[in-house]
Amino acid sequence: MPTVRITVVEKLGMTNLQAEYGSKCYSEGEDTCCDKFAIGDTFTHVAGEGVPAGFCAWAWADINRDVETIKFGGSFPWIKAPHTQIACCTDGLRPVIFKIEQID
Image (cartoon, rainbow, N blue to C red):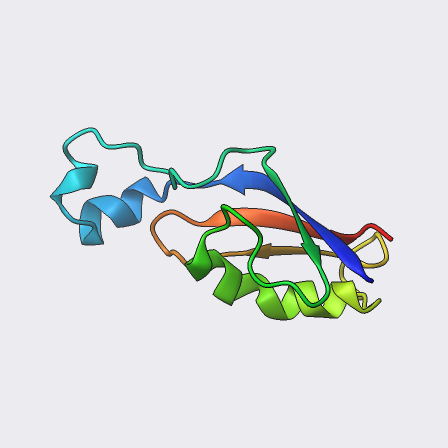
């Protein structure tokens, strides 16, 4: 079965946007980056399975179409490596960037 590895490659805290639009938790010293993932975390997704254990459901909804494309051998012309994609969740205040790659 096609298998995909998802790796967390970057976490961003959009402090300028958090200051303007975020709730008071951002001004009270809370970490400005997503606390669900750590850089370097990896997850495996096998065809026919659901969301990988421990993966954020919101982030999964954002990157699932890219996972499906890569899982079945697709590539994107703007990415150097075949069967690879860089995608992110759509949290505008604390986005997480993922590398998605086919591993079999």
